Amino acid sequence: MAKSTKLTAAAIQKENSVLNEEKLIRILDKYDVKIQLHFRKSQIRRVMVQYFSVLQELKRNEEVTDETIAASLSLLYALILKEFTDVPIPAIKNIEHLIKVTDMLLDTGIMEEVYDHFPKEQLELIMQEVLKAARNTGTIFGEAVIEQSLQPHANKN
Image 1 (cartoon, rainbow, N blue to C red):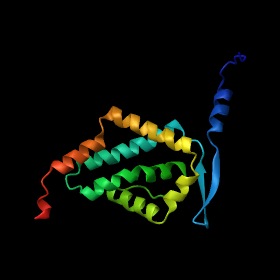
Image 2: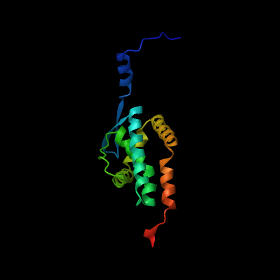
Image 3: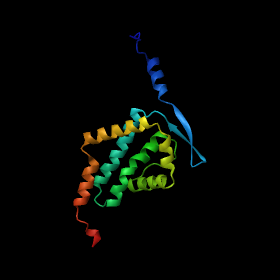
Image 4: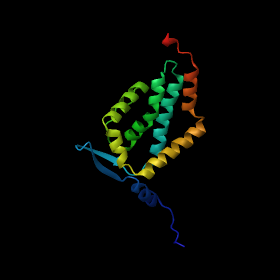
């Protein structure tokens, strides 16, 4: 059995500093991007709060389209890039703005290239946390999809 050691503020600081590891990657054969190699739980929580508030906004918006709901699935990935890289993602004004930013990241190949460099276990960790939170919050997104599909589409006449 390993010798036990008293937990000190210095020991906490040392444990915390391990989580600061970053890596410089090259994407699109010309751009350098810094990525984090460890996803802190506090950062994961921030991403989830942002994502679920986007979904809440979707749920409240009566004029949301089927296209917006479908696009919201990839918004989480843009929020992850915003939190765990130095990719210059602007402040998010609203859902439509976030969708445009996400589409640009997808269409240019930036999102895929960056994701290929993230440690797989870190991506799995964030997805597990998001799924756990979704189960605990009552599947906001599923409710939004159901509500949208049940509303009459008066605009289509």
